[in-house]
Image (cartoon, rainbow, N blue to C red; front, top):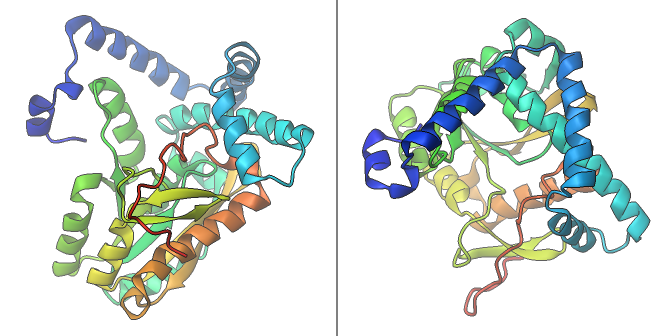
Length: 314
């Protein structure tokens, strides 16, 4: 959660009485939904799909534009098919994220398979921290439960929610109840270095596909369009010499996933800095092209235009 000092200084975090009351009532509803059985959860998701796809058409133009650029070789019928599958998955993901608040470890064990964790455990045994690069694909929120099986401390880098303290607490509980620690994005580097100095093995988990400001110094082609990326992951990795792993979350069937860990770099300080992000980005593209309906297509990922003077990294 965001520091109270920042909440008081930044007006974007302000909630009036009626807004706070409404936000609290909505969260009470979410808590009720979170204890419903899965058959009810997916019944709500199916109704949600009819509303957001056929009545509201939630961000339909954004989704279609993103898909058409990402897959220029596909015809409109194929693009529409991916879009419809995306809407179904988006609705499932939304309800699964709510359900996370009320899920038990036993329920999670039956729904999230973990592969490749032994490759990470050896670093914990040696007292070394690692960096884990994930992205907004499938149900990344459920991966906070990996802490129950990991020997590292899971540091989840998050963006605080502005103007809705009740929702922020609801999500924070869902993520941290498994034992991991939520870290505001502006404290990510400092926190990683602190754990390293204390010789406490930690996993710095970053969803590194988020959109930075247009003046980011790192721009490259991502799914056939120019896009900026945060340079924080490569800077932290090089400074700390932490091994870098990639998290691929596969959807096995509705409500069942497999988290697969694979190593990208043993010592990132021994490679060109640009190759850290480029390797990660190309790995993302490979996963997305295989099953595109599970990526977050409703996000305006390509909203910026590369400024003059910033070269494209290849």
